[in-house]
Length: 456
Image (cartoon, rainbow, N blue to C red):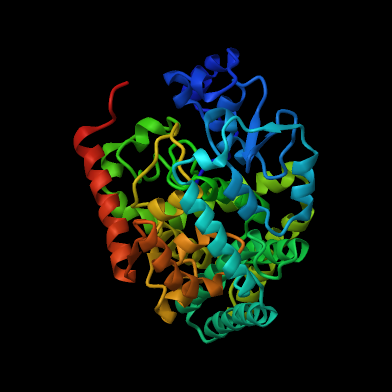
């Protein structure tokens, strides 16, 4: 739904002048720095530091494999990346070796000085208990079930196509095969399918490329920025969605300027699923953003899977339904329309209606997850299935590398931890999550329809 992170708006180009004056720590940051996007803010520091534990590591000349997300938690701005680093890289020995090889210095203040120190220490203890109980262990049997499910749903769609029901077939191709490819590739991106990063990335490339005609690597770069700082202005790419849709009442002013239309804003609750998600995002991702990414990076593995999605899936539809190539490709596109509506609508129910965080404010890993995402009926197996276990978003944000089928039970256990530390852990019903999402879309749309864009 978002453009790549290296496209700069007029605002950021103007604000880049601030970067000409180097600073060293958060105490020297002024109001103008708060308007900078993370990669531009990073340029204002002579030396860039990332804090993990009680040590700060010099990342000034480090080329991060995951891209610019490394700038989201610079110690120079007062951020602490301890939990983020540990959770994102729990299965990567290479990441830990690279970290230890960087120039380092002791942090100026100990972690015990953090107001959340006691809670974070207890969180680490509870996490260790979960790991010892096997909650982070992948299951080959569960992976086999998920892949078999993809084969079965694709076969069902093909059967319906051959039976002369192309619209029902497209719905199955999209809402079940395509969407469930989306759930599986998401787990592959988080390395929680097999526990072996290389294999997980192969599964992701296949399911994202063939099932959704997109690049898993591109998706990872965008999604990790959401995971690092959910609902944070100028950080979470899931918020940087204007003018297509505005999820909060300062979105037009705080996001990169791309135009604005009052009537479109007023109708966004109605257009978000069928038009914005199903048409605009699908077209931009499949035909522009993701192909451009694989070509730039010469990622021929993903390019091959993406090409196969167009050729093979259209061929199957042509043979099953007896259609011409243009008509078969039309039904291929309709299937993607269903998939993108299903995926983006369900993703949005987990966080877009929660409060946003100012770009210059830092909170702990636990508060990011609890305060800016929600869990949705984790005790209901049918909801777990419909949402590919991503209804457990709070737990998923706490433990992104945990196999997602294990998260409903962890959600149940987390209630005691949240009560102990007086955390506002929100569990919504499936209906309640949809209502909150569309009520927010309608409220924000009405705000912009009535008030327009605020003057600078």
